[in-house]
Image (cartoon, rainbow, N blue to C red; front, side, top):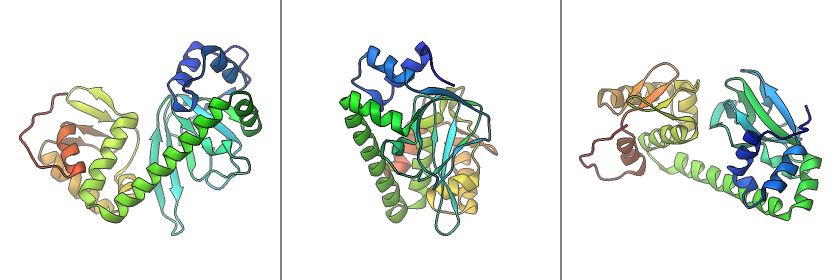
Length: 244
């Protein structure tokens, strides 16, 4: 549906995204009006891997998970997007295809721009084009870092890093720590970190016994984020008490 009058909250989400940094409020309003509002039901697909990249999205409400199918047929959870994040930025490159699948974890609301409209906006606002290049360069660096982790780091470090990433993306403060309550399974975590579900179950159980986390079927409460960071960064172990 077209945006005839951009919502103040929608403009706020644009301001919080690096893709639109440095643009004036009036410019952001014009950019919002050039898009459209889309609603996506929980479990529905925003787009699938390999399909033409026709739209760029900014998530306004809800949660979306990004997965990728490997040549071996394994589905890997790449990241979980929360409100304010850009999805499908590759649409800024004409003729590109989505490198991953985007699926709603819960009911979502998104701002969307078609590729042609986006290219016209970048011509009108050159700063937007520069931001888009920086944005995609950042994602390339992120995937390079993830590949390095898989190739060189111990599985314990990879799992700790993955949990901390999820905490940063969709975690929220709750009684006792940081709660990751987006629906993800041990298999998802195994695929994110290049290990097996058995190893993930064993590791989570060990960390739970040590009081670092509290794990249930599809959610994890990080009770001691500093202790997980020590594992993730391979830091010397020191006495430390985390406070929620």
